[in-house]
Length: 186
Image (cartoon, rainbow, N blue to C red):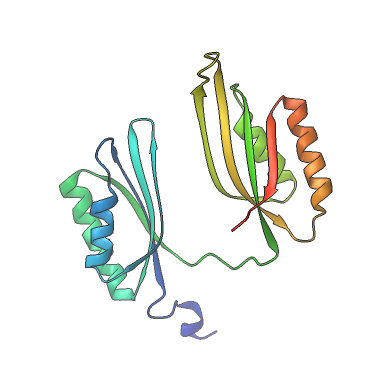
């Protein structure tokens, strides 16, 4: 195998960055500024406030030297601004054209283990969870503690969708979860 087969192309070096700080401050501006200043391009990003902290996950792409410059900038940023940062080199997500995107929404009275049981159900089916947002909240009308989750899953195209939906809804009925599973519409 040649050296060029194991190395990314010159402009295809990926750096995954996770940055954290305490609300109301946000690491978004400082991280995206460093990405731009280094000559890299941000190709994907997520921002979330969880508890009292704000997190940014960003995927930067650039030439080898631009990514190295960004890594040096992140080291200084962590030291000077007090942000919590984790970063590492990675690669692009492989194309999985055999997966069909579906949206799953679940609402239920909150109890320990719901998210684990959902993740376990999909894992046993060979289904990947691509995105997830879940939270606990108090119902306005009754004051009950509630659990809510929105997931995007990748269903193998060879899977029988009606059977999967039936199995999923039976699983949810058994756990007293109100749920839907629909194809993602773009």
